[in-house]
Length: 296
Image (cartoon, rainbow, N blue to C red):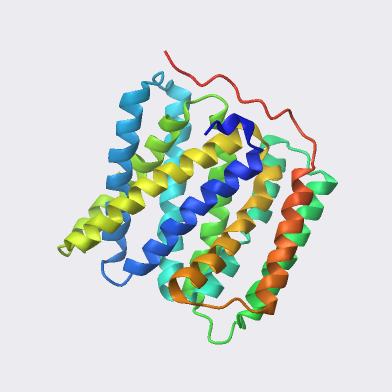
């Protein structure tokens, strides 16, 4: 598939789909392994996958500036993953998803503040409609805030903030660094940081757990390569609306694997999210032309 022919928002939605399946697998094995061990294994297999792609494609070596920023971004990814995994474990799925969808708003804000992006009326309108769709869908699933687990809620909000910040840095570096180099740093740094607490809480994983975490690692690399391709070609604020597609994926995955029948609120929210996405895709910004991939 030639990704250059696809709209950047569609590439982002495809990447989010891969990452949504990955999240479902994480949820499935969440009770089987300690938190830090699961995160560590996810990044170990991610490093192996990214390194294999890096060796095959042989991109140019990163310069000092690229190393510094990607190391910092790797620390952000560590915070994002750790807080999000904790939120998944301690909150009902609907509530964890609800808090995670604050990230498109932070993404548009950081894109304007850090990258100087202009938030046009189509993008702003699309974000508003998409956010309304999220509220309708989550409200229909019974999100009430009663007996809310406050540490889990705080972790979910922190995850949304750090995730948005890391995507803005992705937009910045994707125009200068090879995508596989960015993704390799995105796996090496968190894996290194998480190694110590993972060893301290280690329990022998079963072969099934190893197989699932290997699949999670591979899907993480694939999903983030797609996200990098999207953010290389379009402004962060224009792609913020694509984040709401994860709720659509969650609905489909719930129906296919858990026989959860979507209700009227889910269908109405889905329609609003689709409308918001289409509206945001009409925004005219910088030309969606990918720069030459850094390579020898």
